[in-house]
Image (cartoon, rainbow, N blue to C red; front, side, top):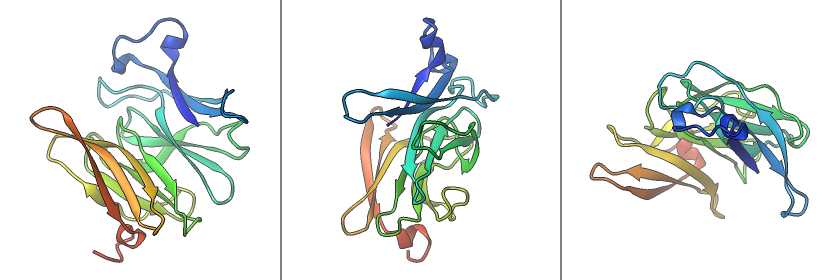
Length: 203
């Protein structure tokens, strides 16, 4: 299970605002679902592009690739998501580096496709500054390259963010996210689409 924590809070000095946080990420491993051990302590510090964004890396998304490697995509305050990889079931992790997914201060969700296990799908806010649009893309090489993003939801200001993604038994892909409302509050929205739609093979 992927998780993140604030390094300031760990020192007993909790951040007053999200923008002061300096988070690290890792995984919790368990053999019995009761006792958990942390591994990873993935961290980096790069210049943020907005003052309210978090530093470090947080809100990790995790997927197991067909070759057994673990891929983690991480929220940052930079204009891109970062990534880290583990080749020993999460015990050790590569230093985080920029991924090929543009995105700022928002999380990604990942899923390995059931009928095409060599492929993974990502859903994320495909913008270097905004929490819109919400886009999907597929990778057939473990997240190193992605298909052309297709927008699932967009906005002219209110955010469409914090997605989740899974597959139904019929193979269709189901995405959920939160939609900020202009009049206040938020709705949970969802969409169903196919792998072929993501790859631009159908409208």
